Amino acid sequence: MWWLAVHEPQLELNYLRRGESEQEWLEPAALMAGKPAKVMQANLAAAKAGVSFGQSMATATALVSDLRLYSAYPELSDESLKWLAHWSYRFSARVCLREPGCVLLEIGSMIKLFGSIGQLLDNYRHVAELHLLNPNLAIADNPLAAELLARSHQPQHQLSRPKVQQALGRLAVEQLGLEPSAVASLKGMGLTHFHELQALPQAELGLRFGGDLVELVAKLKGQLPQPLEFYQPPQGYQRRLPLNHEIELLSVLQFPLQRLLGELQLYLQQRQLAVNCWKLWLKYRDGEQEWLTFELAFAEHQAAKLLQLAQLQLERHQLTAPVIEMGIKVARFGALQGNNKSWLPQKGNYEKQQLVARLQARLGEQRVKGLGLQDQHRPELAWQTLAANNTEQSLSTKVSPGQRPNWLLPQALPIKRQQLMLLRGPERIESGWWDEHWVQRDYYLARHDNGALCWVYRSADAQDQLQKQWFVHGWFG
Image 1: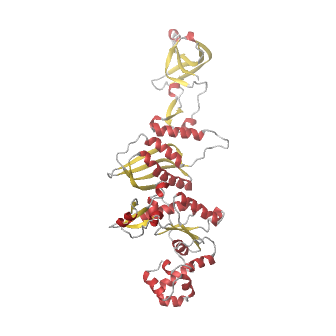
Image 2: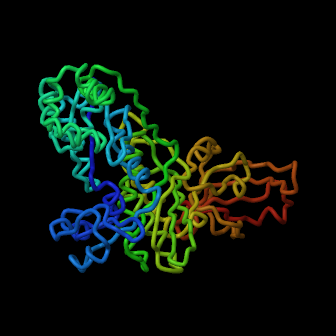
Image 3: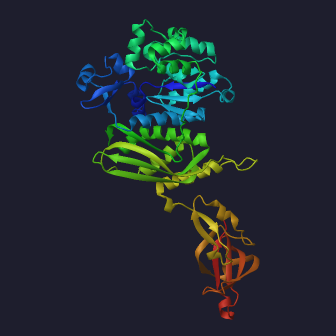
């Protein structure tokens, strides 16, 4: 069994910065924690300027005047590690969390799927770059060895047990995760690297340094089992993103929202799902919170489409205060459907769905409706408004026999018989005897004297005087 260890030294800092633009990403930044606040993590630009772990805020800002500061919170370590595990889950069903900042992936069963170990690693690096990460990767035949190699920046990328042992042998005793007292004892005996521990008899090693060291060596050699608890992705989807600066305009929210929706797209692709309804959470500077709901006419899974529809709806919204934190939550999932439901090509169906979705986002769901049929013979009652995405009901009712106009008037209008040339008919419609709207009509297809085709009728039970009264009920396009 082969394991891939992924270690991101600045995981918490990068997690907080994932909503920033590429230009902002290049600026010096540091994660602060504690009272008084001290530097916990610093990016490459800050480190080059002299910012380092343990420095006070005053020292760090004196070195870099425009240093971007981020505050840690209690759930940050667990939250960021689960975020790393979450998108790593697409590469293996067995993912284990290892604090701080490391996940383990069982990849032995996944190599054939990706074609080779090189292609698997290339794919992982590509996805990591999409998240603006550059983690240390290491492969070993047991999880502890892989983790120690990744944390020690040992790029072991070969499926070779001898290569793994050679890489482990180069580790200094400080890199083995031992207690400081054990490290001091080993160095006092002149033992500075792991290969020197491997050369000693285990019995003598245990006698001098205790059973914990013997157990460690046995685990790194793969001689002892290593029970692991695997990560289980949550059923729903919810992400939050603290903002490093206050946002007062909705247009400025576009970039961090794009990041959040990009992560959602990866989640949906992994599970072959789409979204029917999602919510945007905004936290304001004054402590107030707001949820904005985005109902979609058709299930969508592409981040660009979700962002486009959100922008149309956000045009009608006003921020009540500067935003300091945001997040998204999926309220309702839908099935991921292709553009075609048939073996034969059906052009334009997806484009029509997108048009309806954009209209609903801009005008509101209640102002965009579809049309469907009802089981009624009376023409004025044979249609109904439907939700724009409710196509099944509109297709389930068969159209009444006979030719029907595309434009049915809200109310039939009187018309003179002399203006009409009857072309087809009559078609008797008699219905509604069970309610108060009983009709008995004879319908005709006629040509108006202006050349237009129309649908006319006269009452079938009319007396001689009323038979001369005709009504136009619709026009043909």
